[in-house]
Length: 534
Ligand code: FAD
Ligand code: SIN
Image (cartoon, rainbow, N blue to C red; front, top):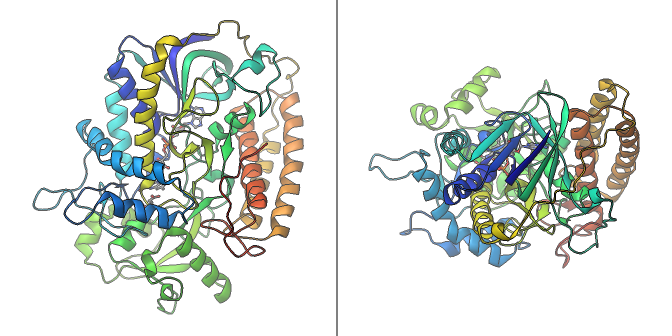
């Protein structure tokens, strides 16, 4: 099938749907098509727990404090102008989603109850119990249904962006004026590859936690958008900054994803402890359990290695049971399901891959290095997060850049046209059925490599070993890709291999330790800025 849509949105999480709602409301004359590889409500957004960070209580908090906390967590590798912009515009974006119907918890005085998380000097996290992401996804999905000019297509897997390359022109990473004309998409309902032509494309495909064995990210998080932009020769930066959340619920059976025990629990008084009850965090940071995530995750990793144990603990037994249940009902239930009663036993926790701070390079308007292609959310690198994202700044940044992209695209869309000469997908020579065992086995191997060699603490030898093995997997998988019928699983594997390569080679290039990237061969900070890829 061949589709023509004024604007193609890939990925209906918080970034994609915020953009779509704004665009659809402002321009009912434009046709907007939203694609998702699974269902409309499945995304990383849906699982967000802690909430959205925004300066709300202007009596105690202010923009400069939020900016300072973001820079401190980001090890000053952030773009200060971008941080200021996001922090200042953030509260207005939160008001947008409240206007669209999002509920956030309030106190007895009917004021929003503001939570605290690691690295924040004030209470500024708006939340809906421990289900903030579910509430946001629900709100956005309901709202988007109100627009007749929006079509949401479920089970449509975006495979590749269409550029001049598909008009048989040579496109390299230094070719100026690369344009995006839409995307080739595998319709999982029919197994056909469809061509979607668009005047503008907005990419919001989220993160890539699935490249690690232990991750809080759902199975959709395979970095497809980042890999697509890399293949289209767009700019990607700083992928070495992989955020490990300190407190996933210990999961000895290795079920994926790992259940998150929100940092908001520590913000509410939960204390990190060893099995013998020792509070170990004061050895690492005066903020103890509420230090920024990179510090806490590294501390837990270190304690586990030194003590030779498989997990540390989060103690919430001193918190009032009713209040705990009221604030964290899902976490309480997940602990009970895992055989732990958090009111009576300490919660066993381990770090797990959680967030990609690098990604597709975007400017302040959400524009990528490819003309006609905008992006927002976890798939992007804007300069907001620096070397380590401050808790609950992701949802905030996604909304701000979705809004800015909407404004910029609104100014340009009337001058942009379709490129009709694009050929349909060429599936010649790919007649062999997919060998699923090869795909699942390589996926397992990739996760093993990343978890063993490119984790919280890195060394040159481990990184070299990882790159060598990733390149082997890359070769085998590209051979498979050339011969076999395409499938979402094969595309996801290719994308994850690309992401693993970008993370690992970025880590090799960054010869310093900063924020989330810690290499024992270069223990100090050095004056590096962006790591980009050729
Ligand atoms: P997503 O919400 O991940 O949406 C991406 C969409 O793209 C999905 O619908 C996906 O199916 C679709 N997609 C992907 N690839 C393709 C493809 N090839 N074709 C078609 N569709 C595709 N951040 C905070 O700020 N506060 C929190 O409290 C918080 N808690 C979190 C808790 C958990 C457990 C997790 C995992 C993350 C949390 N985060 C939190 C991070 C935050 O949720 C994400 O960074 C954010 O939701 C990403 O939004 P997004 O719109 O960029 O992408
Ligand atoms: C959490 O609730 O701990 C996650 C918050 C975040 O990822 O920002």
